[in-house]
Every structure is written in C-alpha cells, then in structure tokens.
Length: 384
Image (cartoon, rainbow, N blue to C red; front, side):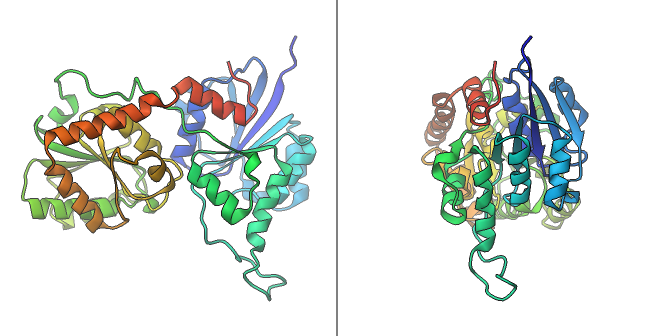
C-alpha cells in the first residue's frame, strides 16, 4: 500500500474569490490517491458548495493572526505532521518569514508559495532600522527572506514575477508562472438565436449590453464604470444601451444609490452573484474591467473566451492578455467613456474581427487540463 503524502495548503485571506476559483480549478486534476490534502483558511472562506465539489479535500479553519511568534507557528505546524506545506497569499504580506522558517523546519524543506494577487511596489522602507533610519528596504528584504525557506513560488502573470524580482528581490529561478485553468468549452461564444437572459429584462437582440463581473469592493472600481456609463448614456442619447453588473459585495447598496442619483436606474441592472456567469457573458457585447490592480483577472479570461469586446485598465494581467484583442484605458471614468463611445460607433466588421482575436487567444493557449497540471507541478502536488 502506497503511503500517502500529507500536504497542508494555508490560505490566509478572507473571501478572495479569485484565489478560490483558481485553487478549485486546478485541484480538479489532483491525484488524491497519492496524498492527504488539507486546506486551512480563515473562517467562512470556502462555502459548502465548494467543499462538496472537492470531497477528498479536508477543510479546516484557523485564525492565522493568532500565530504571532515563531514558537506558535512551530507548535501549530508540528501538530499537523505535514510532509509538505504550501503558503497561498492573496497579498504579499499574508505570511511572514517566521512562518516559512517554521514550515521549513517542520516539513524538512518541502515548502512552496503561491501569490494570487498583484504585488504593490510602495512597501520599500516600510520599517525603520531601530526606529531611526528609514528607507533601507528592510521590509522588502524581510519578504524576500521567505524564499530562502521555500523551493518554488507560483505566480499567475509575468507582471507579478517581474515585480517580485525588481522590488522584493525574489530569485528568478524559483518563480513559476501558470494561469488559471479555463474551461473554453463552457465559456464559448453563444450558439443559436435565443436570448434567455435578455428576454428576462426586456432587452432586444439588437441592443448593446455592457457587462461587469466582479466583487463589489473598492479595488474593482465599479463606481468608475457607472460614472463612465452615465456619460455614455447622456452623450450618446441612445436608449438601446444597457449595463449588467454581476457580483455582490459590501458596496452594493452604495453603488445602487449612485446609479439612482445619476438617473440611469432604467439602464443598469444589478444581477448579484450568479453561478452561470457564462450565460450572461454570451448575451453581452462589451466587457468592462476597471480594477485598480489585478494579477491576472479570471473574469477577463472568461470574457475573452466568450469573444467579447473587452475594455480594461492597465493592470498586470490585462497588459499581458489584451494586446490587439481589446482596449486598455486609464483608470478614469473619462477614459472608459471615450473608449465605450468609440466601440458603440464602430462598424460591425471591426467588432467581429476583435471578437475573433479574443476567442483565438484563448484557443491558442494551453487547454484547461494542461494549465491545471502546470499549476500542480509548480507546487509539487501529484496530478492524475
């Protein structure tokens, strides 16, 4: 009988949807006959439907901030008796070097890291030497020390890799890049002539539907999209343009009020969280991503796969994916508005060519299984 490898996957973030989507997509291809896999995260990070979809994973909850000393980390990890430990971060400061050092001792060097979000470039000199001498980059150095105690670091875009090397001194030879596995068959262009979603809201087949799929939080800048859309409605005077907002979050009430104040409540529809995002994308025309920062947006990949005209701000992942397949604009309502106005006035041939390029980009990339196995290999997780 093969002795199973005990792997701990530590996720120190709360309700970071992209990280969970990425994780569940590549773990579908993990070989659980060769390992016992345990995910430890903050409370309420993985809802029941996610746990049910990955029945062979053990899910536990722990308040990581309580582990504020090296001795507590050693005691905590030692009690789990892991052969391997993976630190998954949705922010570069989620785990400190004391945690990775403790893991290195407990797991005998079998430590890996995964960075899900983009990397800030303004933490240099965050701490002062003896509280006197600033700007020595000590905080940056303390973050890079963690790489001494791990074998590999997995990131989801070239932009994140470049920032880790340039600003935080990560060794390039330890960094692997793997995108989120995407089901290009599920997220494919609409087939046929039925419009189930549009019909629900009285939207005609010839109307133009803009769509945002996002958590309603500050960094996603959905308020900027609403401001741009308001300009579009007021300037174009068209009554055949709509905005769908898929997603939920703490800013939903505030954004609803903004829509009403701007007098566009008849043209903006808040759809909340939806499991069948692809159906709404397939009946849309223009995808908008206005995030202040993103490592590599899963929502953007899904929109490209469906073949939408995409408008994004210049985040790491957008700059890597878009090129000539869509539009990259500045983080302002005016820039997004000007781009949208140009798109709605484009001729049909130009739009169709852009949609074909978007879809081709996804199809020319690796398929879901290959990308999933690239993620697993980088983290030394056995795959089927």
